[in-house]
Every structure is written in C-alpha cells, then in structure tokens.
Length: 242
Image 1 (cartoon, rainbow, N blue to C red):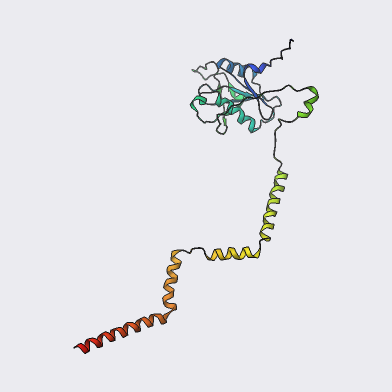
Image 2: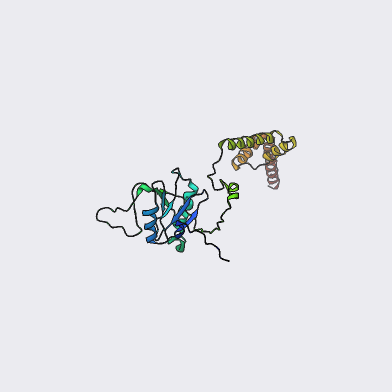
C-alpha cells in the first residue's frame, strides 16, 4: 500500500516549535541558517531573540498579527536560544534578550566586519529572566476538518480577570471575619491563660524582686531582731565566762 507523504513546511529545516500561545518560533541550526533566518524570514513585526553566549542560535518569533507578543512566548524563545548554545554543555544558567526587527542590522560600524551569522544590534536590549536548561519534544497530529472546531483557542493568550480576583479576595476576607466571630469563649479563655504563662524578661523579674523587700518590711525587722538577740546572747555568755 502506497501512502502519500505529507507536505514538508518551510520552517521544518530549522529548529522550530509552536509556543504555548500559538506563535511559531524558529532558530538556525548553524551560522549559515542563522544568516538565512534573519535575512529572509525576519519581518518587520517579528521579534529577534538571542543570548550573549558562544554558539547561541538566532531565534525569531513570527508575529503576523503585529500585536504585542506575550511574555510566556518570549520566555520560551529565550530558553531555546540559551539551550542551543555552549551553556548546554557548561550547564550555565543565564538570560537571553529580545529586540524588535528594526534593531537588527547587518551593517557593521566603520572599520569592523561581521562574520556569517553575526548581526549588529542597535538600541536597547530587553533581557528576559534566567532560563532553565530544559528541552522537550512533542508529537503533532493533523486534525480532521470535522474536529477542528473542538480545538479552537486551545493555545490562546490566557489573561486573568481582575473582577474574578477581587471577588475571590473579598470572599476570603469575609470567611476570616466570620471565623473570628465564631471563636468559642472557652478557647478565648485558654488563649488568655497561655498569654499569662509566657516568660517575662529578666529585667522585669529583677524589678519585682527589688520591690518585694519594700512590700514586706516585717520580714526585715524580724531578721534584725533575731540578729540582735543573737548578739546579746553571745555578749552575755562572754561576760559570764569572764
């Protein structure tokens, strides 16, 4: 049985993947492909991602709509740029950066020369968070036309709803208030007793000891009386002996 081979897409000759938000991300396998990716496939609305590492691939994020690319897709592209570099063997955790397409140029400053696969970046570089050295692979399935509607918007940009977050926070605060009102009286008394049993600082104990001498003057008088009796008794004995 002869099976018809599927059509090979133009980007399959490069490193490529589909991001979590349905953006096509591709990078060159060598210096020649890096040159080809930028010169032929980098459009004005695309994003260029790279890392300041030896052997790092030139990554571009295709953006046909021209809208802002979400941070998650940029981070995934940065991981690709770092993993396909010398950092993979050296196990170095570092950051990638991205720029707009109009910041990438092949024109070198006067007196300098750019090798194949090298480009001049003009303007500010937008650095990404440190990338993890982690790669994976996936299997893509071709959907039948009747099942395409069941998988629409699976790779959309997921944004949090501020109204739902505020409702959740209000519900948590209400639960906390209710819990404080429903505390039994027995538990409150036990907490007060535990607070009274807490150890006190040494300075307070010394102050209380000093106050005890003045609070019980009778005790001090009795001690003096006993000492006086003992002195008189000793004196009387010595007089009798003489």
